[in-house]
Amino acid sequence: MTTALKTSPRYYPSLRAAWIPLAALCLAFFVEMVDNTLLTIALPTIGRDLGGSTMALQWITAGYALTFGGLLLTAGSVADRFGRKRVLMTGLASFGLISIGVAWVSTANELIALRAALGVAAAMMAPITNSLVFRLFETDELRRKAMTIMIVVGMSGFVLGPLIGGTVLAHVSWHWLLLVNAPIALIAIIGVRFGVPADDKDGLTDGKLDIPGALLSIATIGLACYTATSGVENGWLSLPTIAIGLGAIAALIGFIWRERTARHPMLDLTLFQTGPVRGAAIAQAGAALAMAGVMFSLILHFQYAYGWSPLVAGLANLPIIVTMLVASPLAERLVKSYGQRVACVIGSIVLTLALVAMAWAVPNGYPAIAVCMVLFTIGLRVVLTTAAIALINAMPENRTSVGAALNDTAQEVGTSVGTALIGTLIATLVATVLPAGVWSAELVAHFFHGEQIAYLVMAVVVGAISIGGSLVLTGSRVAEE
Image (tube, rainbow, N blue to C red):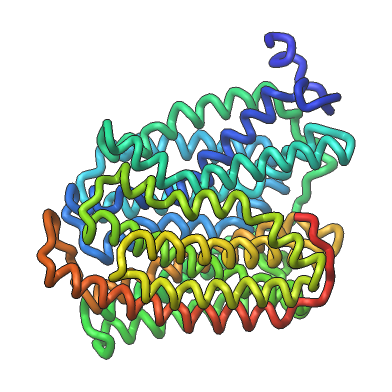
C-alpha cells in the first residue's frame, strides 16, 4: 500500500492497482450525492429543534441545490484553468470544514446559510470527480468499468440518503448527519493527494471565469424561489413580493445578456439551438422538480401526519430506492425499441400519471402510496436516463464535459424549483408552521387535502415541462448511459 501511495503513476494498469484513488474519488462523489438527500429525512426533527417554519425547511433543502446548481459550470471552468486535482482537494477540504460548523448552528437561518455554503463546496467536487476517473486509466474499457462503479456509488448515495439519515437519527443528534462529512472528506483528500496523477499543464486552459454569469444565475433562481416565500409571508400582491419577482426577471435578463456577450460565457446559450440539448435539459429539470417535490412532501407526510420516527420514515422510502436501482434496464430497452423521443415521452406520461395517482393515494394509507412511489420512480428513472443519454450524445465531442455539467445543472435547477413549489403550496394550503407532536384528525385531514392539491398542481407543471422537452428529442436509439 505504501508503494501505491508514493508512486502515483500516470496511468494504472487495472482497477485493482488503482483502488486507492478510485476509492477516494468514489467516496468524494458519494458524500456529495448523499448530501443532496441525507438531511431531508431530518427536516421535521430540525423544524422542532430550531423552531423552523415550513418555508425555512424548504430553504434548508433548496439552499444547497441553489448554490450547487448555480456554480457547477463555473466550478468546471475553474478546474480547467487552475487544475482539476487542486480544485477537487480544495472542495473536499471546504466541504469538511463547513460541515463542522453545524456544531454551532442554533437557528434555521444559520443552517440555511451553512447548507448554501456546502453547495458551493460540492460544486467544486461534482464535475471533477468524474473527469478525474478518466485520467486514471488509458484504455476505454477500464474507463467504462471505473465510470460504472462511480455511477453505482453515486446513485446509491443519492437514493440511500433518507434511509441512512433515518438510521443515524435513531441513535444520535441530527447534527451528526453533517459532522460525519469531515472525516469522510479527510480520507478522500488523502486518497486523491497520493493516488491521482498531478495535472498536466498542457491539459489546462487560460480562459477567463464568468463570475458575473454564475452570480446572475444564482440570483435568478434564488429570487424566483424567494418570490414564492414572500408571497406566503407578505401576500402575493404585496410590495416586497412584487419587488422580489421583478428582481428575478431583471436577473434573468441580465444573465441572458451576459451569456450572449461574454467572451468566455459560463453557459454557451448557442448549445440550446440544438433541439436534443434543449429538450433533454428541459425534461431533466421537470423530472428533478417532481423528485424534489415528492421527497420533500413525503418526509413531512410520514413524520408529521403519520407520526413515524425518522428511521421508519427512511425505510418507507424503500420502494423509491429499489425501483431507482433496478429500473435502468427498462429505460435502455425503451430507447433501443422506440427511440429517445418516444421513450422520454412514455417516461414523462408515467411520471405525470403517478403524481395524479399520488394525490388519490394520500388519504388511502401507506400501501397505496408505496404502489404510486414505484410507478413514480419508473417514470422518473426513464426520463432521467433517456434525457441524460440524449443530452450527452447531442453535444460536440469536445464539449461532453460541458454537457455533463449542464445535465447536473438542469437537475439542480429543477430541485430548487420543486422544493420551493411544494413548500409554498403546503405553507399556503395547510400552515406556515407545522405543529409538532401528535396531530388531531382534523389537522391530518387538512394536511392531506393540501397535499392532494399540491400533487395535482405538480402533475400539471411536470407534465407540461417534461413532455414538452421530450417531444424535442430525436428518434435516436443510442442507449448507452
